[in-house]
Image (cartoon, rainbow, N blue to C red):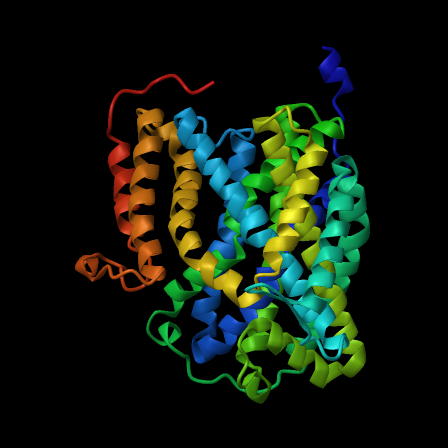
Length: 445
């Protein structure tokens, strides 16, 4: 009874703040880079490509958060302990120090700082290693600030949700309105896979945001934050997390649609662009001059910083639970240092290395989220979860090897192999079969 008396109810203001914080955690580096570039390449097929992108960059993260809420953070309860831990560790490393977190620092440098630094070509050579001096100094400072904010997780909702995010949303709204009111040109002919299969290409492009992977991490982080805020009842936690998920998804969809439109109508300013960051920078510079460049710099810096804080906090919290002898703050310091080191590999190299990994892992996470919603209909949830994820992992690895440049032509007969989604049909068929396998067993504890 004591717990019931002490349980705090979320006010409308608290829920809105939680939703803004969730939105800010998701809105990071890839969210600002990939949509404009995809919109430019999709051209006339932009609506279909955008729909596909929204499936994996908005829909799946939303469903992922709801799955975490539905299971109270136990989305892997039916997997063997070793397999569940291995999958969780892989996700946290990918989303944390290996790819996503370092990328936030790099994008903040490329778009938020580099345009104002003049000559940034100075390089330090240490043996066979070359380090860009400006990039090194910036990333060290960026992750030092990230570390300081992540060291105080109990204050995340206040510092991120109530202060930084409203500023970020005002800036993004201003940019979106300008994109709609001041399009740079007409859409052009689609390029590459955007011409032949824009919907599927958009789905795969959405992988790059890593938001579906992040949803599993952020969902558990938010539940922990709610507990620290005094929201102890599982039903109240679930309700708050689902509402926050819809607020975050609405914000993400708004940003993506405007950025896709910007890229598709970029016209001459997009010629020769190698990434969406360059398109954004050129558009803002042409339409708003120095003031616009400062606005874009602020948007990117805030978006990347809030995401970095969320990633480092979630990773540190998880590994602290896995290795309790090492304190949370020690993990924060460790991961912040690793992020600063990895960031200096360079943005292009980091993205190219991450693609095969994401193509391999994403099918497993999508399958995990999907089968979570099927659990109550499965005669044997434990066997079904393991079988579905095993199939997703096997065929996802095939797509990943193909993306890494390994010759997999002997498997080209598989449906959607050419599009990089050979995993989809076998996994879906396995899910259907699992509806008829075995006798129902008691739910996992």
